Amino acid sequence: MIETFVSRPNWAPPVIEQKLTELYQLLEDTGFKANTIGKSQAPLMSPFEDVRRLMKKCKCTIVLGLPQVFMHTGSIKHEPITSHLTLPTEWNQIEATMSLMLDMPTLVLLHKSVAARGIFDRGAANVFVHEFDSLNNSWLSSIRPALNSLKEAVSP
Image (cartoon, rainbow, N blue to C red):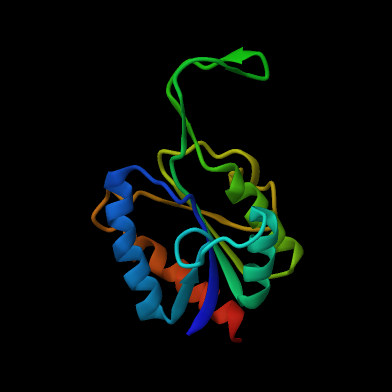
């Protein structure tokens, strides 16, 4: 099994959380062992230090940009939000950056309902951002090729 750091929020909308069970099964079936602070690993120190220590034990990272912050009003850079805006957890940004700085193979997956900002903005980092929609029945088959590429990057 390939020890894999999975960057994801500890809470996700229940309809998406239910679908993640299928993803974790796919990861296991593909040869990945998922590790996440607060899910598979209990926190022991500061979040940053826990992430750093766990990440260093892993061979690769999967970043799951899931709906976490829901904005209905407000502004971004003084521009009013004109429609519903959903953002991932800020820890996705931190953990993805840490993984890239450690030169780890990093797979970035962004849920279709989440705005592509920061690490999820195509071209912002040297990673390809794969969009998925866990509410679509074929979502697992759509990410399988990316998982296979990650596996090849870990064990060439």
